[in-house]
Amino acid sequence: MRNHEVESAIKAKDVNYLKGILKSEFSVDPDINDIAILDARDGSDFELATGLSKRLVFCGAPSSAFEAEQNCLLSYGIYPNRLELSTITTLGGVSDYARFNGMKSPILCFELASKSANIFIINQGQVDVARPVPFGLDSIYPLLQRELGLKDETSARKLFFSNTFDFAEMGPKLLRRMTKELQASTGFYEVQTGQTIEHAFISVLPKNLAWVSKTVSDSLGLEIIQPNLEKWLESLKVTLGEGVEVSNLGGRWMGLFSLMGEFHLREEGANE
Image (cartoon, rainbow, N blue to C red):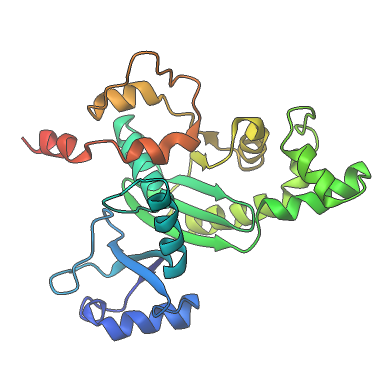
């Protein structure tokens, strides 16, 4: 996912120009990737013929990856109407959750995966920053191996995901490289816009890596959003089945629940 502001609304309607941006700015080949273009102001599909926005969000993945996921689902007898990127649904959910709770300041969203990470800054429903980071959790294992004198990175990885070691004290050292990237992004944004980021949302990570959120919070001085999913889902007309307990679910569920919400009903109600 990448955001880009084109020079003019006219150029935003030129398919060849947009393909050139993907290749030159982001090293993405549109011939082997499935790409969707969204309006960065509200996340709606950007219509080439009628769109007026110059602020765009490119999102997608290799066509082969989509095909592989689709074939996997079909092998299980699941026939989806569509496939959606969890990154997009999560950002949409965080934006709506912020609106539901009256959060007016920009929010730092951090998606940390194995080989890479993504830094986003959203502001009242708009995607202001979408920046990739070329390293992820895998970069931590060598540091952990050296710190604890483990025999190899495999041992470090197993310990990292276990519930047998407290990483709270070692966390700042293990995440120093990542927190520097986050500080650079938030600092530049605040200087450019004059706005202050007060909250952060960290997706994907399981519960046993909660220390990552605390380390980020302490390093950047931001409050980590711990969503009250039950009240938010009620506002979206999502009814939970008996026995479903969401109070202990973390932010990694935001993307899934975002697929269920009827966001348009709230918008229509607000316009009445």
